[in-house]
Image 1 (spheres, rainbow, N blue to C red):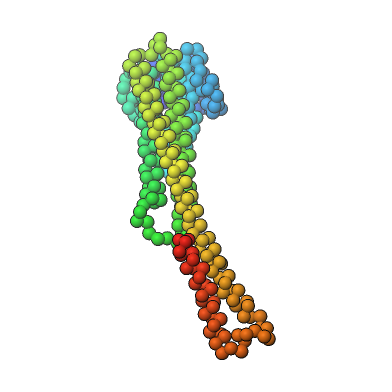
Image 2: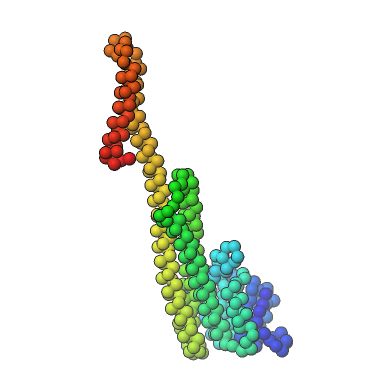
Length: 316
């Protein structure tokens, strides 16, 4: 799908009067139409997927070819990354994408009524909105971490069974892990946008308007602050996962402590029962009328002595 902005009111179908051409999953005919109108190459999806810096930031025929993996927000899973291309020249801006993007739609709705604007203005506005959307996603991630922190560290947490508590903490670790992955994607997108903005400022000094350059500098400053904010969130993720793992280990250790105490406490009674179960002919207590109560009392004492010793040492 091809969109040209501002719209050609003459209706002659010419793209040469457009300041911004937005190609969404373009066909060969749309690629050819743009190349014939402006003499610039339209990058393919395979070229946009390349990860080398020299492939993502380059100059061809006085036009900047820029590539960044952008996060396209959706209703269910707003973390889909897709390569997106920008071709910025003095007379036109080309964007090539292969997925719907709320940020692009917002800028299109904002600039479509304007009859005339500079391509650099559309480029700067796109970066501004993309950075704003990334900030919104980071705020969502921060709220997710706040919820996880409340579940882990709340002092009024109800007493739960070991199996249920472990299952809840395991789910919590999965959630925080997914949040960490999302933040890593956001951070990578921000780094790519920062490189694009700095590259545009450095390579378009001859024709880039000063106000647009200032706006791109502000974009870089905003990205730097968001990257630092993301690093803080990543540290929180590590803290929450370590805390959840520690709680699981403590609960499991408590179970093992109980089993260890039970096994140690059970050894003396078993020893007593084993001795009096041998049934030797000359056993002194065999014909003693108080032999059975004596053996039971000895079993109780043998059980209580380890328990009292563990309690005095604060092991239980």
